[in-house]
Image (tube, rainbow, N blue to C red; front, side):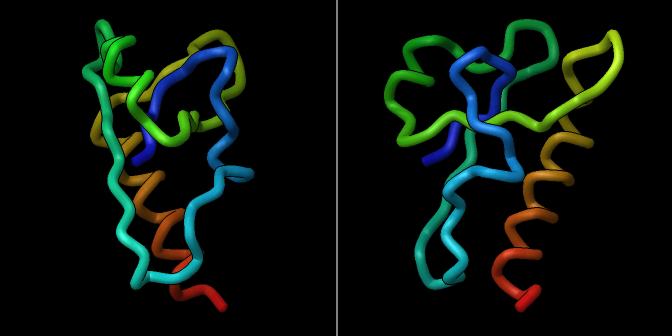
Length: 80
């Protein structure tokens, strides 16, 4: 279970321990754009990951965030 959130303890999506085997279940928890994922929920996650951003803004629209994370997961599963 991965929490997707911008925190100082988050691992970059590019270095996240996402399984490369599509037979290993993966779940992502995304928060809304205002308050993100609740701290108590993040504590229960196996890992917290974030999408690196550049510039002034440090977050993405939730639909864009989900798209990027799922694309990276599928790339690892099928990009061999």
